Amino acid sequence: GQQLNQSPQSMFIQEGEDVSMNCTSSSIFNTWLWYKQDPGEGPVLLIALYKAGELTSNGRLTAQFGITRKDSFLNISASIPSDVGIYFCAALRSGSQGNLIFGKGTKLSVKP
Amino acid sequence: DAGITQSPRYKITETGRQVTLMCHQTWSHSYMFWYRQDLGHGLRLIYYSAAADITDKGEVPDGYVVSRSKTENFPLTLESATRSQTSVYFCASGTGGPSYEQYFGPGTRLTVT
Image (cartoon, rainbow over all chains, first blue to last red; front, side, top):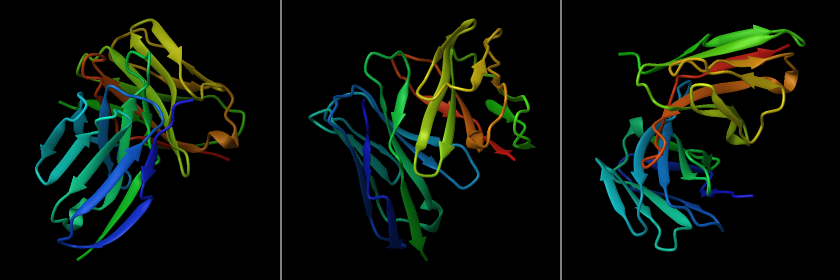
């Protein structure tokens, strides 16, 4: 079945550093989404991507929809302590009318 | 202006009992979803609904029942709870195409003893 491989699984960085994470698959997708989950909360939508090659920013966050449509990347610039959390990629399951499949997440820790 | 709410937020129940988790959204989104989140598995879709009275199975539907008589509500019932259903359950809603964005509730932490 369709699967998303998200990496890295976890990251420990210093405040102020830039962060990169990615999501890859052997399947082609038409929609990629990035979510952040804080402890004890539900995932919150950060960025949505709908077109291959698309680059979209939301403040210090930038995400790209890979040209091959099999991957997506999320970058966070100048990290701050409140960036701590788990970041999930998600892609629209082929043939579905709204079902997303999720990566297993990247846990980000930021040292002040 | 609550958006999407879930109740209860925490629940402890015994094996074999029936449990219903509630989900309510105020956006009039046509789509609603139930996920479970477990360590090592990420978010897995249990059931979803494209509109009132239309529901369909997701990736892990066994042991769960859903209904959707009104657009804004999407309850999830565990007919006879098992320990393997101990998890955090998230409800989400969305408009479907063309954006497919989903918006999540705060979750229900369910423990089955």
